[in-house]
Image 1 (cartoon, rainbow, N blue to C red):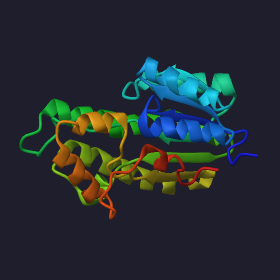
Image 2 (cartoon, rainbow, N blue to C red):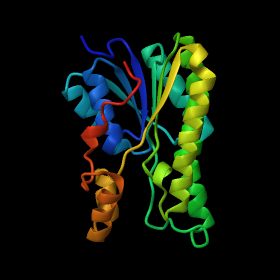
Image 3 (cartoon, one colour):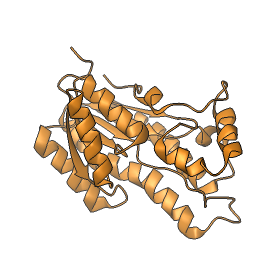
Image 4 (cartoon, rainbow, N blue to C red):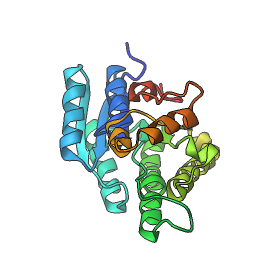
Length: 231
């Protein structure tokens, strides 16, 4: 018997990386998983991998920065599986063009805020009523170690700091509805996107590992599959 038998999980950014690892793990624990992402090829591959491992998953193409798209995805999840128990807001990411407040472009600032912070807000806005309808549940937000230690990437750092603050706010506000709200704060992790991001700069990769954990090594995506507050 799995820890998540009979539960339904909505996982954003699950076409690859940490989100994919979470989707496969959750399904392995018995959850039915909505794989939420903009990448259809990646999302369908996650579904294939999940089903191959004996789990139940479906892909829903979603832009987490678009309110209508998120609302449709939540509705589609509930329509398919009958309820929602777990909301795992993992979609996000930084870029090589992020930088200092005085140098970063306005477009890059808003890209990070829309994807990392606004996307988390939207999924919670439309997902929480379904969690309440189900009698409670769990929200897990992916923030980042940069939210606590800071980096020169102003946009991403601010966005992830906002996610951390939003997590605290919702934990206080929705506890009375039997909803647990937690955050995970990964350091540098060896996902496909991050490896590509830093492939041109070995020194940056080594620095990322040293800056984010005592071992000085970047984490692996499988390390973040088991998230707090679920099950």
